[in-house]
Structures are given as structure tokens and as C-alpha cells.
Length: 371
Image (cartoon, rainbow, N blue to C red):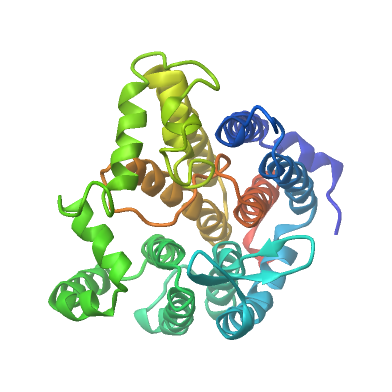
């Protein structure tokens, strides 16, 4: 159902303008990260521009649709996503040692990204249909926890540990918000701590190396190379940076994955601490705005759905920046709105669009509207 014009009064223009600013900055630094004198406008830049332009179309399309319909669709589509994850493991496209993509012809799509968008819909729709009130017992969460664990294991199998962790963190945070008893989280933490040696042996060799590097081990010419080059790029930017397109770590190709996971290091090298502070301030302002709007929603299950849609963006931002600066081990998690990659751009914009659909209806939604 298309939107009632009255809902446009509550369109979240603040978050939209911040998204637009972040996406523009991201496009500029993808341009910088891929710029070569003989080919200034790289194929990566063109794909990123297409991803952002189509992303805004997806954003507005999701905003125009009633979120209750999106939530219902998302619930059933999540089961289709699980099937896609299985197909990806069996016959997906291989790149950089991982089998994470399905080839759609004009673009390779990463089905694991869909879990970030659709799991909140699955979660909120399931709880809403199970319970009319906000009183939830731990047994009400067992089915969603089972689906969450199954999804994370399938994503981990690709292997894509970063996305699997984002999915697990987001799912647990949603359970916390929905009112799951705190004993569950205490027991989960205890079990993970006790089983840490077993979990360690389940990691792949390169994942173990990344943890060892984080703890100070590794060869600076091998395992530590990526993080050391990132820290050099960030530190050499100083207060105001070396100038746009003037970053030597980037231009001399010392910094691996500069257009994707390490684009924050490119920004720090070229526009310095001042630019990094401005970017982080934009993210903080965006997240504060999103949480403020969610807190004003009158329906508990709408809050759950909206929270789930933005949690993965918040967690990804924190992990990526901490990873690039050496505060966390390196995992393959892109920086939302900034890093190159069409799949995660589409999912981020779709998540924000679904959130905006809820935001525009937040003062007209009542419990009776949910069924």
C-alpha cells in the first residue's frame, strides 16, 4: 500500500541528510582509493555510484511501503534467504578464498547480507503473532534463537565470520531489547568462556593469525602487514591530512583493501584527524537521531523491528573503525555508507528505508493496527 500523504510530515529528513552526506564522502574516497592517472574514473567508482544511486531508490521505495507489509514479507523471505545461503555454499562464486556470492549476471550479490535486513522482520513478526502483550517468556525466544544459530552457522561456513558475528550480535541485542531474561546472556557468556578452547580449534588458520596479530604476534611483512600499513596511514595523516588524492600509503598501494574494509584509513591519511572526527561525529549524530525517533514510537513491536534494522549498521560501524585502528582483530566488515560494495550498500539503504517507513507512521500506529 502506497503512503498516505499525511505521513510525509514525519519523514526523517535529519537521518536522510546525514545518509546523503556519508554516502557522498564515501564516493569521494572510493574515487581516491581507486584513482589512477591513466584511468581516473575506475570501474569500482562507477559501480559504487550505481550502488548509491540505486540504493536511494530502494530507500524511498521501502519508505513508501507500509512497514507492516514489509515485516510480513520479510518473515517469509527469511526462509528463502536460508535456502540461498545453502545454495551459495554449494555453488556460489568464489573470490579471495571465500564462497559468498551468487552471480546475477550484471552484479555478484552476497546473500548473507540479506540476513541483516530480514532477520529483524522475522524476529518482530514472529513475536508479534505469538504474543499480544509485551510479557514474553524465554520459551517464546527458542524458535528465533534456533533460526539465528542456523543462519550464523551457514554464513560462517562460506566462510564469512564477520557477517556471522554481526548477525549474532544483532540477534542477541534484539533479544535483550525484547525482554529476554538476563540470565540467558550470563549463561551464554559463561558457556562461551568455558568452550573457548573448542571454539579456537574451529577457526580457520587465517582467522587464528588475525587474533594472534591483535595480541601482538605475527610477522610485520606477512600477518601484521595489513594492520601496520593501516596504522601508518592513519598516523601519517596528522591533524589535517596530506590532502585529497595525496595519501602515499594509498597511492603507492601499500594499504590493502583500501576501497573496502580500510577506507577509513584512506580518509584519515588524506584529511587527517579533523576529517576523521567529522566523520565519526556524523555517525554519532545519525545513531542518536535514529534511537531518539525509535524511543518516540508508540508500539513495542514497531520499536523492535526498527531497532533490529539499525543495530547491524551501528555494530558494523563500531567494529570497522576499531578494526582499522587496531582496537579489534581484523574481520571482513565494511564501513556502512563508505566502503565499496553493492550488496552491503543496498542492504544498508533498504534497512534505513524500512526504518523510515516505521518512523513516518509512528504517531498513528496503535496495537490494533498490528494484526
